[in-house]
Image (cartoon, rainbow, N blue to C red; front, side, top):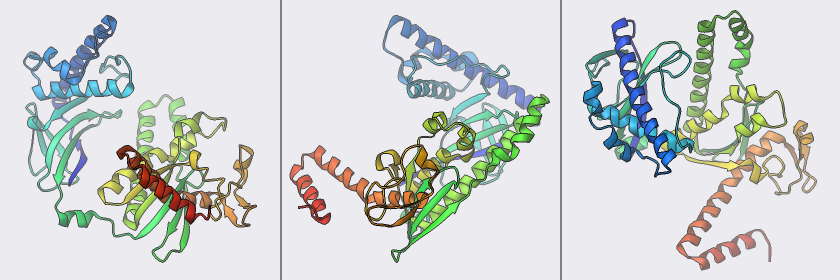
Length: 399
């Protein structure tokens, strides 16, 4: 089993000569990026086949000698350009520049061009990059690639991506010891509602309140912006970002350690920000629910925890009774203010968020059975699909 990770280290950038050289290297990287972009624009005008990373290599051959930059860096820029253009689904991208207010300096590299020692000093293109070595790279870690970049406060960082082969003993150590199963409903207030199924089959509900890091600093941030103290405003924004990331990392790690299965509701943040409920856009962005979901997915895969996202829209998790399965809950915009309701079918009383979290947990088996059916249909096992459908009907008491 291979585990891919990325470590970030802060570079000791008090040396002005070092910073000047890094800026010069990033300018050369921008030159290659802009050259690739210009080639792509010409292809679009001629209505030719769009360029891939493989197609860009012959055009940039010899650029490393001309610009005095490692050849692997030229290749990395080509790959990143082709990848970003493909992801954005655009015919071409914007040109890069290091001018103030445009693009932050960025230098990609491959493992062949990087050397490092046990004290956290990295050597790239003849430059010695001393860092605050906050944590050591794991033993037998194989460095694949990385980047050198600058944030909006002028601090330089080096990001090292590496892979390591895990033995059976290490895999067991990484495997989560938790035996609980948790369904999660995300929202504004509370931030998370957890329905925890214990090994004995009992259910426990927990709520995680939102920290509102941006809301706490909003007034101070506004004063700094009005006073045109933009550097101070950037520091406040950086602090908010770090606090939010720290909280989300701790919460996701705790969930992975305590559970063997996690099911979370898929929330379309972009749609919620633009919908008819005005005034909640800042709160949704401040929560960082999307970032939390991606963190949880990554950590779950690393620690052998079952993870699934279920669509709240298709499942109707807030309207469906978790006891009888009837859609008897509050509906529409008017129903959003109802936090507690009684099922007209079975008479069970539900709290809205807790009922939704439980529905997410119960939807696990439904999602798995749908995947089994899709796999069977692809392989042509129609009889097995028929038998599975008949079994479900019998379990539900339908003749």
